[in-house]
Length: 315
Image (cartoon, rainbow, N blue to C red; front, side, top):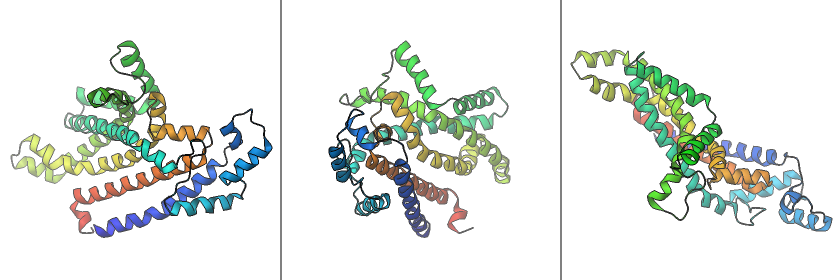
């Protein structure tokens, strides 16, 4: 186990290095004048523009800009926002809880829907519930997040007036704040639930045909014990693979969902950074999200080893 964790941690280094290089140069390929985007399109003061370029280090050759930024990054300095003048790391940490809350809530929504319905769909194969589950998963995969979000806002906010459509309910606290989370979490978790439900169903169908499951039934165990204790645990390994991959992708999905619901997280921060060409904000946020993605995959590998004893013995 320790060797696995050490190997994965060492793999983090080249991944983050690649992300830092790509994010640095790609954001600078976006056309437009960064100083004009900060000061406004009517800004026309060559002297002040030259001073601002020197202040932000934009007057240096691009490779020197990268080395300067990367050198500060090695000391934990993500840079300073060109718009707000605040340290990027402080802005990330300020918005991270909102994004994490949304991503974890979407993951919980996905698990609560996908695993029970995936198991029921497999154990009632070709029945009405199976057909309904497969149809629901197909719809979940086909509907884009932003469209589903708009549909839910129209239905539950505009028509029924049950749930708020914008913001995170800052300042309300407690259960009152929870109602702001429901629509974004369902919107973000729906597509993941569809994928996971299909994976749970197919994995369960495969496991239910294994010899050890037939042996458990032959021993006289109840169907509930056979499914929950013997089949479900082994069928969860590929499901966890999908959940692990999608958990990292959830943070990317928050970019769209946060915009639809005006959720004050990292997604809104990245969009603002791109539109305003706030280089340090975009670079720092992308690097932070990449690090999170790698950590999630490390946790998935550890759960693999826990669920499958063969991996602990190296087979």
